[in-house]
Length: 139
Image (cartoon, rainbow, N blue to C red; front, side, top):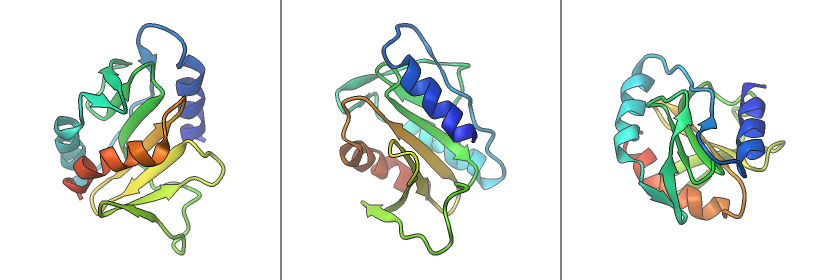
């Protein structure tokens, strides 16, 4: 439910100027250090968009452009992800594609879940490929 609200906020504000409101996750345990590390590894430019600012600012949230690409590190395990679901592997990172939200993907690592929303004109496979390298480094 929380992911749905974030997705709606991101997509609803994608055409607006200024900062984008994104609810920051609250990582626990090993995920805190993993997400802190990921924050330093994320690119300044992603699929042609510059990194922008979210409100409230958080080391666990990164957005690009007008918020059509967003990363949230340290989110809970996706509620719809079953133990038998197959993950799409990109550069050594397993990604769960939410079947009910085609713009929502979650990287599954040993230390943290990393949620990515890809909207607008962006091609999800290309964005996930670019994000897989830094995500693999926190695994």
